[in-house]
Length: 103
Image (cartoon, rainbow, N blue to C red; front, side, top):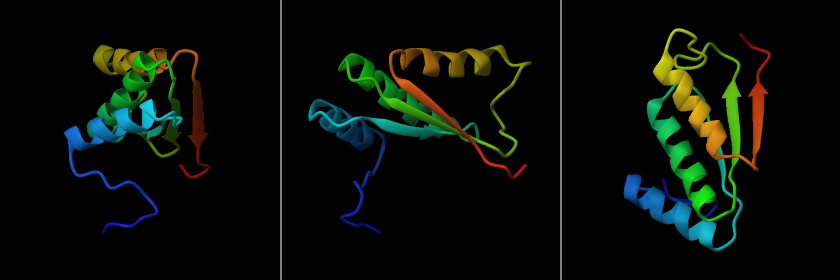
């Protein structure tokens, strides 16, 4: 359902175009990520990378609280380094970690 209160995104290329357009326009890129979806991780990585390229670091908000399927995975070298890369790329930005009291 389209609404003027938010930016409608139809697919991956559309997301990339809009992230670049708003980043170039001077908007602060703010992305929420959790560890329940590989697709969410990729969307966050796109925003963080665009912010890095434009020298406008993104704000990354990590939502945890419930048991996360992909983070932290101490026994998974790939997942550990994937999240490490996400947070390292946003260097000179801010990471906000939110943890709900529900577990």
